Image (cartoon, rainbow, N blue to C red):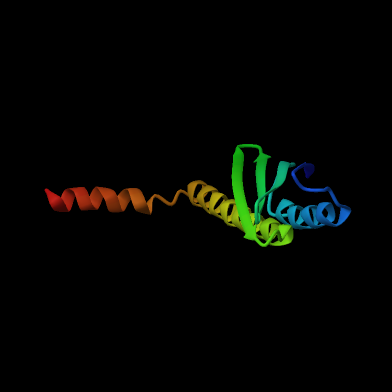
Length: 116
């Protein structure tokens, strides 16, 4: 995974960079093709904010995580969890589509027929 990290109003540190790489490499294992991630870390008053734009083929994900008390690690963990959920949803949709599971379409047609 190609990761670019931008710090806004936050001093850069190697510990934060390694934490981001560790979390995103776990997510990279879930993806089939190479991915790119743009990470923006910022602080506003007492909030730490982490934003990630992840691009992998057709999959494009944007997520934002916040943590209070200027805890950047919690913000990074929060946004990584959100991205994990979005990747899982995308993969489930792909699996249903490839399997030809049209159950929801059949249910909608049956409801339309029953209402008439």
